[in-house]
Image 1 (cartoon, rainbow, N blue to C red):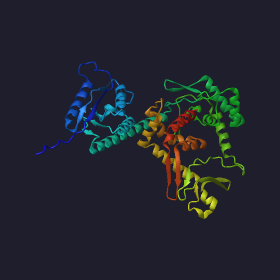
Image 2 (image 1 turned 120 degrees about the vertical axis):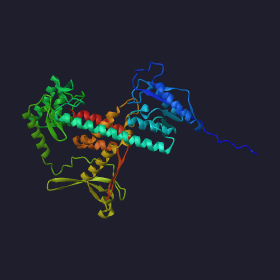
Image 3 (image 1 turned 30 degrees about the vertical axis):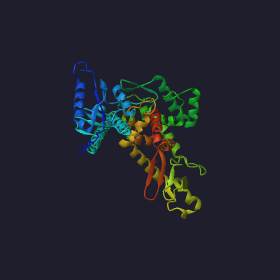
Image 4 (image 1 turned 60 degrees about the horizontal axis):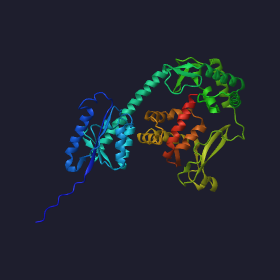
Length: 441
């Protein structure tokens, strides 16, 4: 009688990763890292029948926070994963790998590329099973929920502080420096600010004032010559009269103003008058078509071009299907859409997409390429503030940001479909950093 062949169990190489946030107690004979490792080794031994065995290398990070991935043992582990030396990573708890949802997603992506799974001893799951993967998704959902709740608390605290007129950080505007977390007048820069308000009240021309400032060698907070956008942000900044604006409301600030209120009101009147001045009949629409070159008709897949019309002294902007424009009104059922409506719909979609955890992860990954490391909190804060920032931008700046982000917009009678180009995320963050700095003047 022939002997029955035993099935060959594949060998699964397992690595144990341990971490402790501080160095306290690491000098004792049996420390926290040893305890974590012992539990993980026992778990691997219990899976011996499945072919699991422990690799000899140790991956222990003592005295390193789980808030980032800058840990020597973790870096060695990731290199060995990439080299194909490991099949399963075993940890005592998930938070030993990382406490950051962003970093966790990046690690999972790196593991998936090499078909590497991981197991948590105390949380009784591993991603080699469908139930383990389901548990992981549930944990990630709760982690994201916890982060959003924390973000709401931060926003509430921020709003309460703004109502008290407090300076909440960031780049101080031209004319101020920060001392003990408060805005204090800078003697030299404040004179530049006073000159800007005084001269604008006298001449009423931003173009001429920019020329004068350049000739005098005046520069902005960033050390660069000012442009008209920078100048207008100074002239509209209520900080200069000792006030703090937040979500359309104005509160008395803790800081001292630089400009007298009478001068401020004079400048505001001039700005409002300049805005209301009618354009000549031969002047083209000054508001740029932010979707130029990326908007297409969803019915005939032809490009749509910006157009405008005048009625009762007002201008109305549209996007017109080129098929209809060239071949007659009956060539396309869509023909024309109102520019403001479709542009607002596009931005609302973009803003919603950027706030999703998946897009935040992709943005953080894009910013993390190369040698420059961008804090996760900075990326998340910038994306969440995009809605507020958008309303403060000039139309040209809005157009530039959308051109960075959106590859194509398909418009039909039923909906507006936005297709993002993820390669523009890094450029977007750079633009937002620059614009945010400028908006603080």
